[in-house]
Amino acid sequence: MTDWTQRIPGRDIWRVGLVEAPIAEIGRRGFLPEDRVHWLPEEGRLKFLADPFGVWRDGKPLLFVETYDYRTRHGVIELIELAEDFSPVARSVVLREPWHLSYPQVFEADGDWWMLPEAHRSGVLTLYRATAFPRGWEPVARLPLDTAAIDATPFRHDGLWWLAYSPKGPQRWKQGRLHLAFAERLTGPWRPHPGNPVRDDLASSRPGGTVWIEEGVIHLPVQDCTRTYGGGMRVLKILSLGPDRFEAEATAPLNTPPGAAPYLAGLHTLSACGPMTLFDVKRIDRSLW
Image (tube, rainbow, N blue to C red):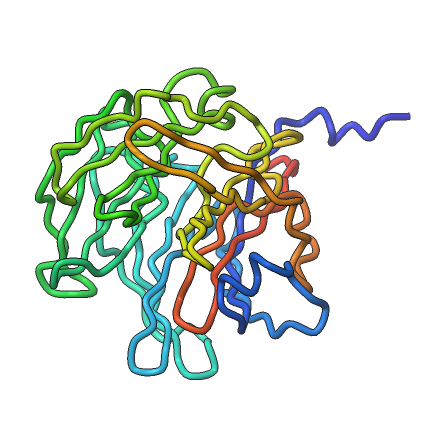
């Protein structure tokens, strides 16, 4: 007999963790049973934290995360400050808009701190600059592209700024297509890659974290959505990239971090934070709540 709870529409519930290893090492070897993992507390019924990005400062990580509540269906960006033992000591909302926000890419460039959150429901990608890092942010540029960008991921390569993102449209496009754009300046103007979508594969297209360069090769964390949204992660190795070229290959899926149970249904963010790597895992809640 089929368990009747399987017929209840499920809600994805995410949880954030930190592992004491740099992102290049995790991307190369995956998670090991002996890895030291620190978990942020669960949020409680119908709420979660996801999409962690971080800055290593004064020997401690500052975390920027999406905070989501199913009762409002609206995400905001929070800052979570951690103690030396990685326990949360303070948290505050640092960015709230009329539309849903998530995936808060935070990075330093040109003498400033920047945030590029996911906000495709607003219809355009907006770049924010810190007025008083890490809590104060202001919008400074709207980045029109060939689509409302989903999970836009910035990086530098060969003298240009690049954005990797997925397009708005059917779920198959959001989860299985990769677009690129490039610009001479972070604030634009941005030009879409003529090959868009440069990749069409549910297993290795939607961006999922921060880019790193290793031995001259660009490494982009990507989601594996073949069985469920954010069901796993791979690393996309970009072997050739230019305004008129793109070549890449994906690694095998990363394994589940130790101690993740019962959050075993997904892994969809991998981001760098100094000597640590941030990630999130999910469970599917089919309770009557």
